[in-house]
Length: 635
Image (cartoon, rainbow, N blue to C red; front, side, top):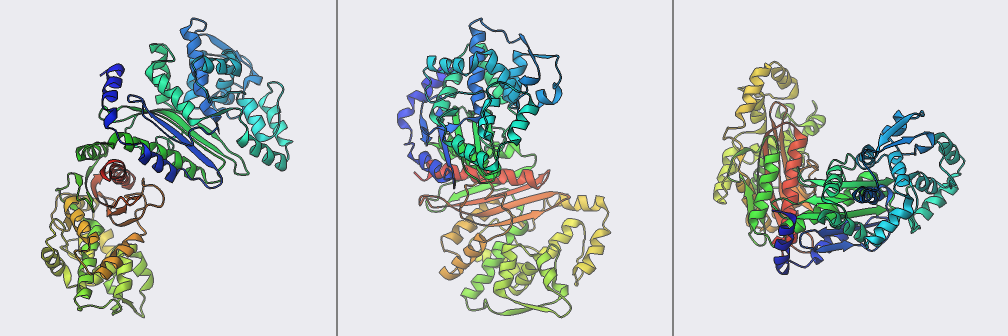
């Protein structure tokens, strides 16, 4: 489908679209930066819908100004006034601070580069020397501003090249181009007080700034083919798609494989004044169109990762709003499928909106090894016994070294020859907060064993979640140990595990990918969590207690929580086994903003290449579900 047909298609359904207020509020939630300001404008290119947060404010462009420089150059090429193969010679005063390849390789006279290569270096790695030579060759800032005015683009102002811009930012002025050594000498003479004053002036200076709405309009018109010839448009979009900087910004938390053509901009200083920008064009999946996005952050002393996360949150919120607005649950299931297929292993997920009952899943009925997520049904069995008067939270349990299980660093540090006693409450905290396996197996024993837990699941009409063995037994079996000794303290067990041949370990671990014991289906675990949140499994007090402990879980911050906005409340439990075969899981309950209810996410993986890739697919499952029910499902 060509661009013109896409534009007409999206225009025909525009009347059915939701109000942009939801996205504006999402931008406002994530765009609060202490000590600074953030702004963003997003344009859905095919429909023309536009959403902003501080979109009319002026922000220092930093290197995002290189997009208008490229447009001016390519316009001259289209007009026959310039050629991309023309060679440009450069010498010592052409080398600008903040440059990579050119200043590192060509500090001596006798070098030349084509305009095509200069524009590649300017946009791909943000080379400032290449930029300043192009600014000079296209007629200087005045010519670029005149081009923008001719294109009727207001709100973008270019006053300096990179060398002048950086000099002013650092507290001194230049009347002419200088060598890099001379530039460093001038900067060394600037006092700390003068630099601080210069940084503050820079952040308030209207020069070299852009409004997010203006930069987004420029990108919108670029993609529409209204600025350049088809060949020049394609060239510029291709280079932007290969940009090598800022992977944690607009692209940072988008689904794997999302195509983004973009240009970053950054400036920093010892006093904390900062500029962290990214502008570009994002391709939505399933023919949902394209987004022009311009995101800027200035003046906040927060760490770079936090500033980049603001930009990433803007981009992901926009992606989800325009993908899921007015979409059926099938759109969410399709998003799950895309994420799962990008993962080099097997992944399954089931999502339920607790209050409405709406759901979506991918491989939701398939059994995955539950790992430590099965500690939730163990906790439910303990708390149900407390509700029935058969157990007490404050009952003390004596623990001996022989009670230790593999994967229990906390308990191992606490137990010594003099013994230890812990309450049921503290054992449950260790089991759920830090996933301590010794605490788990002690509680499982005190709860009546796996048979009692499964009887409880049957009584509650919960299917698809199995607890068949103590964790010590299943962990030993995973490693290839057929029989677990009665005393499985580390001093006894570790030598036995170390003696298992690698081939035996591998074969045993692979059996876990197809075995039935201690497994859960995403749908089964999701139903358990829905019923828990609805108060149908335990008393009000026990339900509140379990959810409170799960909210304080100390493991798996990069899984369900990994791509959710900062401050999102998540009650969850992780599960992991490695390294012979990687099994990485997370299941929990997400609190949505603005009173939109609660979202159960039950995500499992097996057979992936490592923890990082598995955590990313789980995080993306959760973020897609969050975006769907914030922007469509809760409306």
